[in-house]
Image (tube, rainbow, N blue to C red; front, side, top):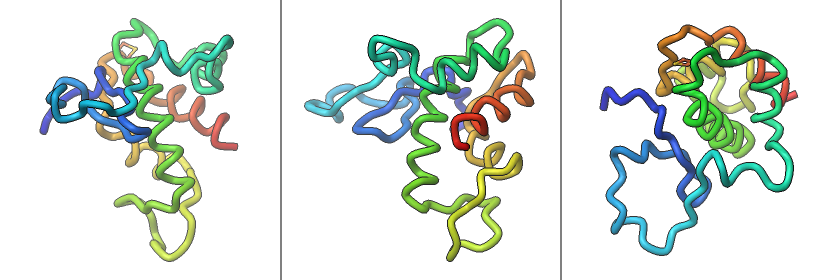
Length: 124
Ligand code: FES
């Protein structure tokens, strides 16, 4: 509750605030951090954040990117959000949908417009 999301990692592919996760509760789980996303080359979201100037100080950026990876997987799986108008249909990842789905990740620098654009670039 009330965390900033800067420490977001993927645990078995699902986004989790690491600061709220008890390590022993995830024994044997696959943990992916921002470093683990790059596989010989930048992950498409990492590249989109760089190309789209989607950060300023960079403090929130690892969490934003890990969260975006998890969020795109959730959307792909058909999970609705509070902003989804019709939960029976696949959500279009427009600005409102992305902002709602990324609302757990705070950016103190206010880089939100470019963060949303970078995610949209990857979502297609
Ligand atoms: Fe500075 Fe997000 S880029 S907190």
